[in-house]
Amino acid sequence: IGDWRFGAYDTTHLSVSHRLGQTSMIYRTDGTMHKGPRRDYNTWTWPEGEPIMGSKEGCAPLDPFEPNVLQIGQNWKLAQMYDDNHFSVSSRQPNGSTGNAAQTAMIYRNDGRS
Image (cartoon, rainbow, N blue to C red; front, side, top):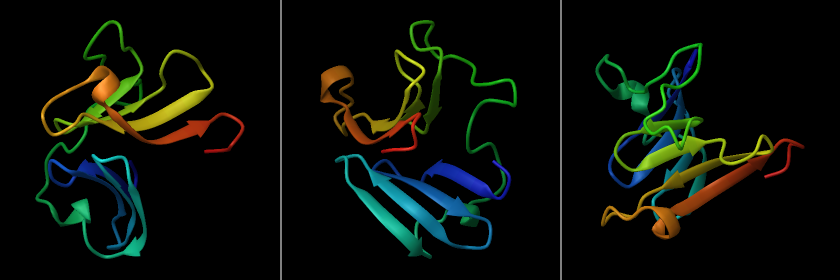
């Protein structure tokens, strides 16, 4: 997205990184977050390709029951779930569990709080 990339760096880490080489945030599948600035886990070091899905029109739903979900890699989901007031960053657990076994690393609210 512009000079920013959201990418599944590996099966355990989702990174938010900038083209100039800084990583602003790393989310882990155990629900922890690791703030930057830092220079590791930067997805701009990857070869060119399609690191994410979607377009300016929105995300193509993977599941009709989850219309506002952007999946990154096999384990990560960025989603506006169930209402217009909350946005979450979550991951499946390494064993492939979903639902109640998922870990939510961050919830953002429409009033600017997290």
